[in-house]
Figure 1: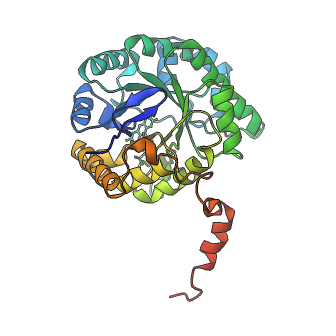
Figure 2: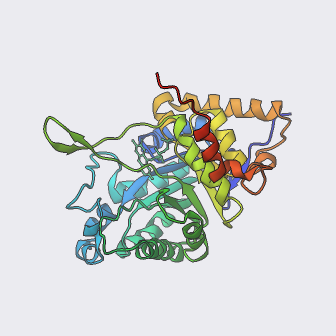
Figure 3: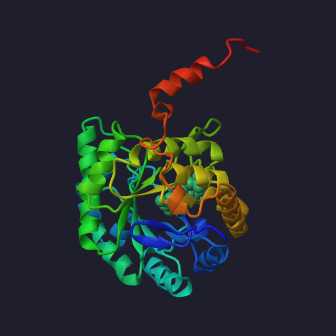
Length: 337
Ligand SMILES: Cc1cc2nc3c(=O)[nH]c(=O)nc-3n(C[C@H](O)[C@H](O)[C@H](O)COP(=O)(O)O)c2cc1C
């Protein structure tokens, strides 16, 4: 008998834990249908950006008053040209409706914003259009030395709280790893912000310099499996500390990556780069290899293995924390080539 791949994420039942993370692969109903036919457990749509909604609602003044200009993605800063990437607010709502009508897996909407303001109201439009949940992509880059960590974190909580208070569907927060105390902010996001889960971690858009033209140029490269170790460690640490769902994102390419993320305690494993490279067929082969692994390891279900290697469950928790660092450094030879 094949293993039960069902997983619960944000209170939603997923037929399997593999979720398509926001990317151009989830940017149309047709490609969502192809992913679902290939076996994907849920999809997250590309983010609708605060700036787009604020523009539509003619609330730019409010947004600027709230301090957006201190962040890197401000309209007068490095905010990337979205081109045709997402459809804008109206097209976005239509896509939620058509995707929900076309597929029988959860369709999660994504909002990207950092300033408390009217744009959070848009969350209720997403809910009314049929979004199964709302992922808040909190891509915030503080460049203001007068703004301390607590102030930045309070802003996160305020934004999450205002969305969670507005909608009945579950809300998740997609974070970067750049916090002094991840366990603290993670707990605040769930307990004070009212989020149902965390998505760990966002991969920052990192601009590059063109040395010929001396201009700042966009630099978006796809990930590899090498990048999975950062989310793995933090999911292992946070699994037993937060009372909410956790999704792994960044570096999930192979069945082994999915299995590792589940072992440390992820409820969902999100994939973007690997789908952009391999197409929907990659989803099918990863799921098949996950099933094979479960059978070979006599695991009856994803639930049975989930979290069995979190920090609180492994016999050697030091492997996830500081002692391992010393060991790794010492294991390198002194002989240079
Ligand atoms: C071309 C591209 C577009 C993306 N657009 C979004 C987006 O709109 N919202 C978002 O939260 N993440 C976005 N991401 C980030 C992915 O959802 C994912 O979190 C990140 O790429 C790490 O996962 P991966 O290693 O599987 O690629 C995008 C990634 C790529 C490569």
